[in-house]
Image 1 (cartoon, rainbow, N blue to C red):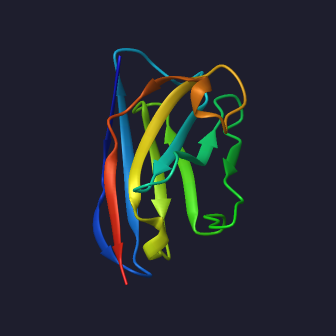
Image 2: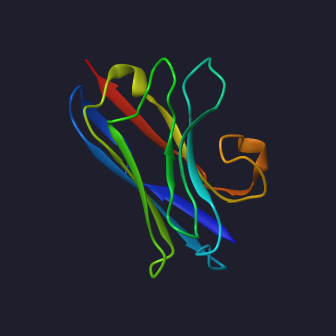
Length: 125
């Protein structure tokens, strides 16, 4: 089983990026999938998650909130997860990781069984 994250890069503030996470080895159409990020010197934090049943989405609502700027989606036919990031800020700079198959609350990284290798997002001011 492999999760391949892509789409990161260098972008100016207020720009947009779309991250993709292609899954192989098994289908994740019946699993909760999520995005996390880790900035230098900081702990990994939850960004967004999407369930399999009704496609319910959850986006972090923290101090450096991505709510209203980031959108998570999935294409089960392609076994691919997406994260559309708009109005990017320098504080969004981090390595973004996709994860799949959560066995508990979606906002805890430890509940996910599979992880991608991460893709670097750098937002310049």
